[in-house]
Image 1 (cartoon, rainbow, N blue to C red):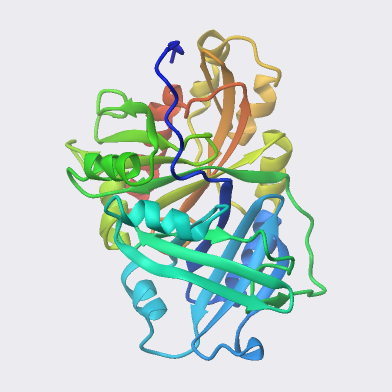
Image 2: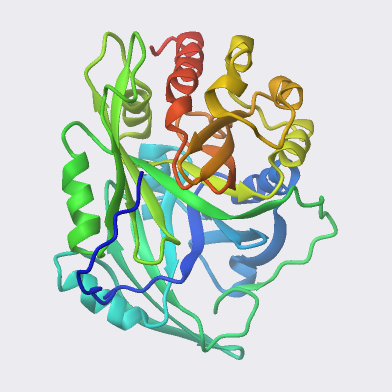
Length: 373
């Protein structure tokens, strides 16, 4: 996309976001999930909360890799909201927490613009200081929690203790959350695009319709929303009519509604990262070998050898700013819902439009194996 110079005055960002603070997944077995993310994805143990820290209804493990923090939470008793979430959705993302300087102001600004409150501004403290959190609802059962932590110097936040197990597999080079993609229901995309624009002050970066994202069988539409400084990017997908059931429809059926489809995590060396992930058991989607036959003609000169990318299945796309490399895992849960994208940007600001057809045909092959196409 070509940048257009404008002389309009810059509007102050009423919701300044410093980045992604943490992503909380509700999972059926937090201890085993923590082991998986350590073993397979190279996350490091950080903090724990549960019976030993005074919680009676849930247990959480926090794992970290560079700027990425995952909180893995399970219920300890029956009849909890956490358990009901897992029963409806399976393992999945409940909270996308956003790091802010003022959680009370973030709550007031967003609820004042129509957001449904989830958590009133709440000060939580211990011997290491205090954290203020507040929250709002977004699509499905997903929520955004605003985290103000300038007054805190503990390991994670009040209520958590340092978790220091002997087991510490090495990292794999994951750096930060590049973007998070949400799937919403039929004709709901514009509703949520407007939510992020009006309630949170995001701008639309790019839009893809079913002519851009379609195969012979399925189609979807997508719009990418970004906050003022570009640190938070939320593509939003909805289904489009096709001959067969699209990946978004499959997701909505198995997740039981709208939710986070995938988390894209950045690396500075995708070849090394993917080799390590693959060796640790992470499975990735594969495109046909023919994808690489005309790759150089499609994307031009790149630093990586095509014969290095080919056996790993790494995809390449170019825009006006540069190019990117990306690869998508298979679902990491029993239901065909949540997966991860590994991405390395070499100047490109886009999302791999040139790979959509090959990628979605690969997803369709997996759907066919599952009998859900």
